[in-house]
Length: 177
Image (cartoon, rainbow, N blue to C red; front, top):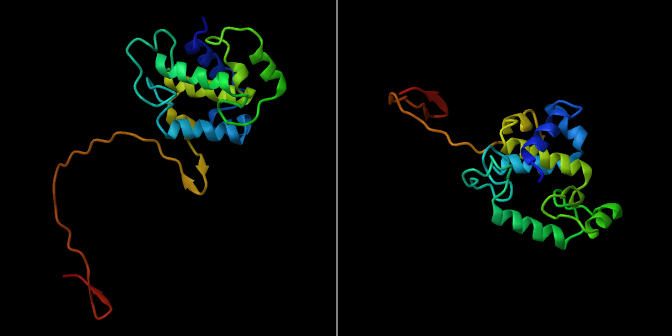
C-alpha cells in the first residue's frame, strides 16, 4: 500500500528548487492550483484535500490525506475523465493508456495527473501531513495584482478601551475639537 505520508515527504525533499521558486519549477497551471488549495484551506495540517474539512481521527497515521468518502468521490471522478485531475488540462495519450491498463486504482494515481501537477499535489499533501507549513508555499506570491491570504482563526483580546478625538471640518479647514 502506498504511504502518502512518506511519498509526500520524499517529494518535498527531492525538489530541485527552494519553495520560493516552485512557480518556475511546477509551471503556472500546477502552481496556481497549489496556491488555490492552500488559500482555500484544503492544504493545511490535518485537513481533507478534497473539501478542506478536518480528517477523521487516526487517518493521518494510516497515511490518508482524504476521508474515505471523499477519496471514493475523487476516484469516481478520475475514472470518468481523461483530463488532469489537478489542472484540468488534457492528458497525453501515454497517461491515458496507462489508465486503461489493469491496475490498482486505489494505489496508482499518478497517471491521472501531468507529472508537474502530480508533484504539486504531493506538495499539498505534504502540507496536510505537516511536513511544510502552508505559509511557506505562498510566501512572496502575488496573483492578479493582489496578495494571497491564508484563512486563519484570530482571537482578539481587548486590554484597554480609549477614545480618540476625530478631526472635524469647518469651512474647508481641518481643526481639532
